[in-house]
Image (cartoon, rainbow, N blue to C red; front, side, top):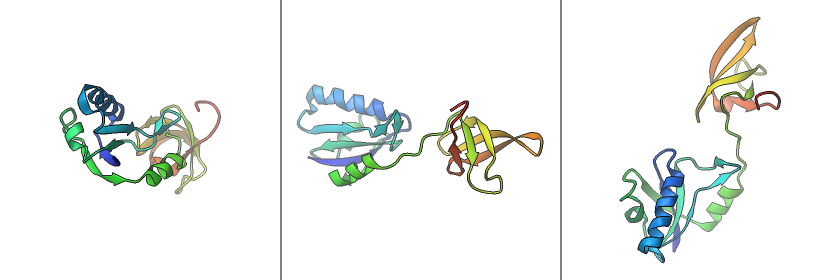
Length: 148
């Protein structure tokens, strides 16, 4: 068996894993091995991707239940080990206190009022006025304190 990277619909990584585990018990034992949804401290390391150990290209095992899933290719054990040991930037969420680390507002500290995986809306006091600005999450870092 070898490992394969499989792109799955957003937020369905664990659903696909449970689906494959059930199929293993219903006749795929020996054809599908381990199913890995990499996460650390409750945060997905690879959102939208799972890794499946299988005897051949796993689209035939996954797609009947998840037609939008696609196998991208094979992956080595070393690549999976490197992925699992990689440093993870904590996800920014609503209510977090953050500091702007890039751009002209660098150094400003505010509170996240809305966030997704790529962008966050932050409210802070700037020049004596409350301001709300949208940033790429890479331009922000969480700071310890209230709301963290």
